[in-house]
Image 1 (tube, rainbow, N blue to C red):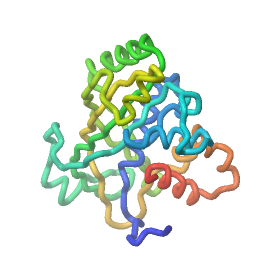
Image 2: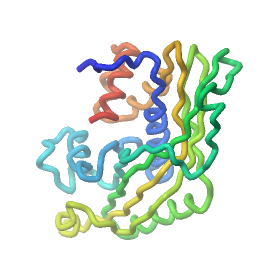
Image 3: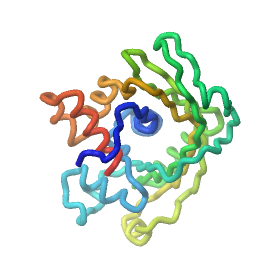
Length: 240
């Protein structure tokens, strides 16, 4: 369905950030396997995981959910990041980026996510937790990028965690019966929204293609599609 709004000059920094989040989680826990990272709320994680497995969405089981996996989902966006780097000049007038010949307005934001890791073995759970505790002991900065007139523009995203070991979940009885363990891994990013007032700004076609190519259900569908189709598929992935 086409959007009611004009997105021509909207610089969507959420999608490249989400791309970077997926790659980060895949690299830390799953040896780079993006198929074990899904964009879904906690409440619909099993349905989304099962549907990507080409099974009936209301008939999931411990096999077709293919543990382990992690879900994540944007739950809140505010203009009150922990890092106070707000500048009224940068907000109103923008930062001049020489390679683009344009000024880009920057608005600091905090983006909150909910997330749960699901594993079948308790020792796997302990290993995963130890990995993220180590990550949390150091500052993690992701550097997503967008493109404008062929120039890549990189912005920083500072990561913070909120752990909950063996978190409560709305499928608790089913999880206990199947001896499935969980870690609540809610997290936030202090980052920025970027604004420009004339020509389109977007994620590079290469980034979108590589991301979707690594996902079951998309990889075989991309060969004959146009770059616009890539963007539509990415929007659907982060909107469903």
